[in-house]
Amino acid sequence: MVKVYSIRVSVFRTNCYLVRNEETKEGFLVDPGDYEEKILTFLREKEVGLTAIFLTHGHLDHIMAADRIRKEYGVPVYCHEAELAVLTDPVQNLSERFLRRSYTLENVQPLADGAELETAGVRLKVVHTPGHTTGGCCYYLPENRILFSGDTLFFRSIGNTEFPGGSMAALARSIREKLYVLPEETVVYSGHGEETDIGSEKRENPFVPAEMG
Image 1 (tube, rainbow, N blue to C red):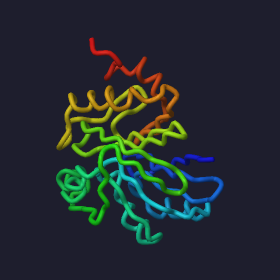
Image 2 (cartoon, rainbow, N blue to C red; image 1 turned 90 degrees about the vertical axis):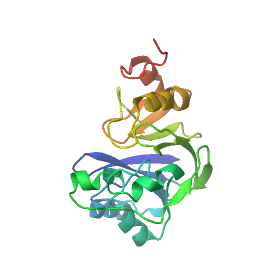
Image 3 (cartoon, rainbow, N blue to C red; image 1 turned 135 degrees about the vertical axis):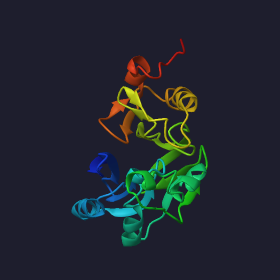
């Protein structure tokens, strides 16, 4: 049995997620954006054997606790291969804009679109969804019908496309061609805000209708 826990982190109210295998007590993190002590305390309270960290994209509010946590637990950090340049560029990862200082994250393991891997007894599939950033991606858990959408798809909304590497056309294409084709009951855990599901977004998302008008 898999359980998803949400941890609100950063001044941008980013959702960091812990995915925990309730049978083995192993788990992995998605987007540890900041407040590293808060995340570490939560992991200790849940007695999690952490196996990995996954980043949906490289903006500062999704990455800033990753380095500390990986050192504490000795686990790898993963992102889509096209996002490595964002992680190591303070202009693209927005640290220069919002922190007024440079922040970079090195030594992250690249993943290709469509790659499948298993960690903590859970199977994940990488879904490359450019638009918010060039190498942004989502993580789909096919056996559990769960999607971690980062800043690609929100409850009745979509990610900002005005930052470096953003493209409204690319984002809409990613959502229609990569996400709306998933089972409608798939639960969507977004980078900000409340959870949703694929079916209701196809019917009610005002920014990306399922069918182009």
